[in-house]
Image 1 (cartoon, helix red, strand yellow):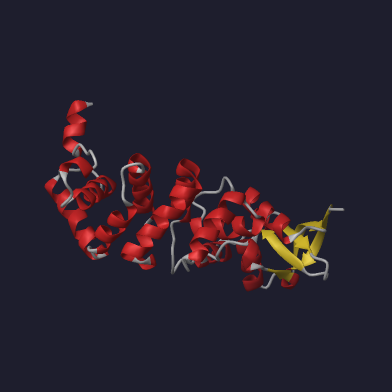
Image 2 (image 1 turned 120 degrees about the horizontal axis):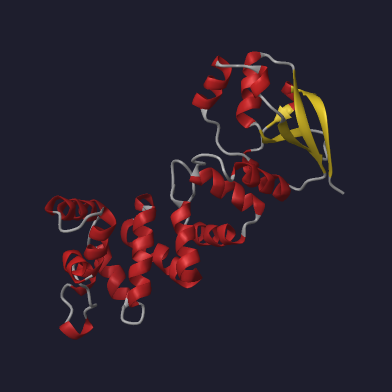
Length: 257
C-alpha cells in the first residue's frame, strides 16, 4: 500500500536515479546557488524505496544546489511503496507544465513509466540500433508524432527507409515526419525498393545542399517544403510518366489555393 508523509531529511541522503530523472542543467544549479534563499527552496519530493534509500522525484536541481551549499536538512514529501514505473510517472506529472522540458529526458522517463507509444517507438528504434540521447537521436517527439498520425506500419517503414538511405547519424525529426507524410500520401503507388534505392544514390550532405538551393531561390518557404519537393523529384526521376507521383510545386499550389 502506498503511503505519503512529510519529514526533514538529511540532504546527503537524497539520491538520483537517472532512469526517472532528466539531465542536470548546471546553469540552473549555479543560479540557485548564487541566489540562494531558503524561502524559495520549497518541498523536495522523494520516494523511499524498499532498501530504505531516498530517491528524488522532484527537486533534482534544488537538492544538488543544497549539497553544494552544505545545507544539512531539507523538508521533504516522502512517498513509500512506489514502483520504478510509479516514480517515472510522478516525474512526468511534475514536469508536464514546466517550460521547455528536454525531449530526450521526457522520452527516457516515459520509457521507464511504460507509456505505450514511447515503448512502441523505442522498439522500432532499438531494432535499428538507434539510441535516443543528446549525442544520438535527439528528436523522439517527431517519431512519436509520426506514430500518432500515421500508425505503426508507416512509422516503422519510414525510419527503416531513412536509415538505410542516409544512416542513423543523419536522422532529423522534421524530415522523418515529412518522409512519413510522403509515404502515407502515396503508399498505394510507391515501389518501396525503387524509393529506397533512389534515396541511397544521394548522400545526406547532397540533400542538405539541395534544400539550401531551394531556399536561396525562394521557390519554397521552408526546409521541410524543400525536402518534400526533393522526395518527389528523386522518386519521379527517370520513371515513365504513368508511374510518376503527382506533385504540384509549392508556388503553384499557393497560387491555386
